[in-house]
Length: 68
Image (cartoon, rainbow, N blue to C red):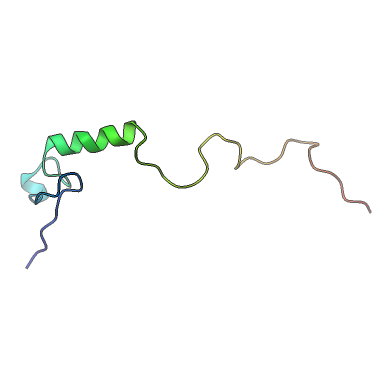
């Protein structure tokens, strides 16, 4: 027995991949709604934003030398 998958957007049953070009969504409409949410930044991945400088090393000379 296979589990019936449901569409993440509308909750309707999703036909299997061979007969559904919009898989894992139930239709092109739901696929496009999901895409627009990504493009509109409604979905976010936790963590610092790319390009905020948090992952870059400090500038040369910015670190203080420890006394010897």
